[in-house]
Image 1 (cartoon, one colour):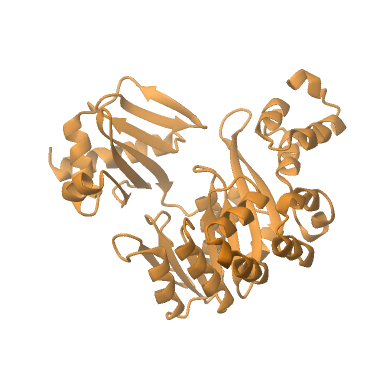
Image 2 (cartoon, rainbow, N blue to C red; image 1 turned 180 degrees about the vertical axis):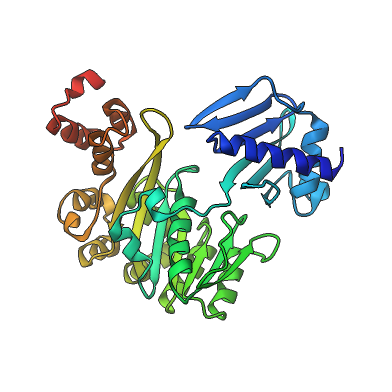
Length: 368
């Protein structure tokens, strides 16, 4: 099968599954064609194209930088896909016990808006800050990229500014508008996030997007850029505000951690923890925990006792626009977007969630 055939097939798949509200496509010769819709992974028994080893190999050759040679050397890889008419894709390929398999995240060419994503005014105001570090956290598929894209494109459409993105791979492509936007893909256009940040600092952007903080090198570069007068937006994998702070600090050797705490307390703007939850009637609802770096919050960072973060989110932090995950879930229940059962199952702090639901007159014993 030729590269051209593989590109045509993936282009059709992106548009078909994208139009049907799916988020991901999975393909392997051993297990066939699967797709993800509303968080459920479903098998398509009647695939319009046979999912063969030849097809998977052709897709790798067509889209992965370095092609099959790199795939055989690294045994896995990531790439962006730009062949669908209405959708792009983010490709992840790997060798497994049945041969080769791949996953494609479906990305709309229409950059999401803050209204469509459902971002709060206090969070939107964060992207107007002159400098600092804004972190979005959550598991894969929690909508972090969509929230960030909505904020960055708001600036792109409304301000004469400069935005520099480092992504692995590039997801949303921003339109030519009022801002100058430079987008670079780590691995094919720049060696690493940290190297890209150093180049960005010399390029006079207002905003630098660092696709993901996975190690101390990237974290150090992001903190340095935020301290030098840039607004840095990035992501991490963490399930709560406290885990985000503790996880970033833990990337560094013990001898450096006190200094990193001080730097983080000085430059942090806020932390947004996200979950996408199956919505009643279909689709997904966004739940967000939002913490801003008030004086009291920075003292928690410096003191190293992030266990008190939840108490702050539920108490005095509300006056600063902070929202706990449980409060966000409770709001979704009150608006009829999700069921009380799903809220109780999703919440990390079950006692606090039960208190919220009880105040709504819901018998939490029935949810056990």
